[in-house]
Amino acid sequence: MSETAQRDTTATPQQVWDVLADGWSYAGWVVGASRIRAVDDAWPAVGSRIHHSVGVWPALLNDHTEVVESIPGRELKLRARAWPAGQAEITMRLHERPGGCRIEMAEKAAAGPAQFIPGAIQARLVLPRNVECLRRLMLMAEHATEPKGVGE
Image 1: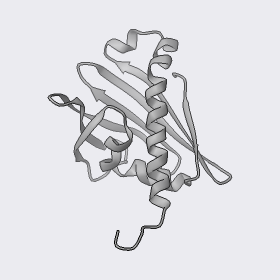
Image 2: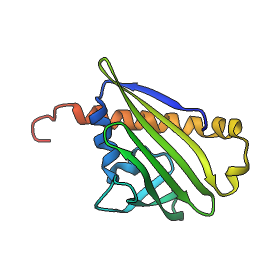
Image 3: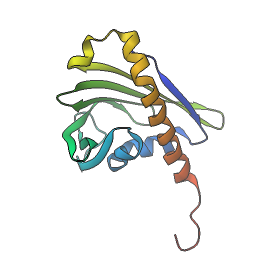
Image 4: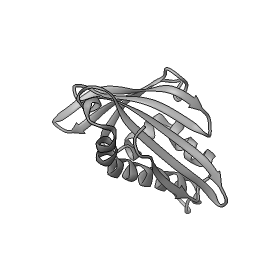
């Protein structure tokens, strides 16, 4: 598997999982996902899908991401599609630690042209994007823990 991006947060594993389990939040933390068209009711159960668009208007690709494995509160394995670019296998892991949790994200090409790129080069290419994904995910999870002001 490619190099793993990591981020520590004050949010608990459950708070991070809550963001991951909200399929409608996917475009908020996944760099490149521009909109969500539909989320299967069973999300994040194995086999369920988020139907999304990737890219910038007017050059949007409609595709989906499917859950391959789901261990609530701990791990989510996804197969993200963006054809004709290809498919990626993404593993999200949550590790409890004092004062919050560590979020890990690993990604590797599973199909399409990128699968022929050597693993070490893939890792260097996707790591900056995955670091930004984790930053966004962390902010969403931590913001969910903040009390709302009066009238919000």
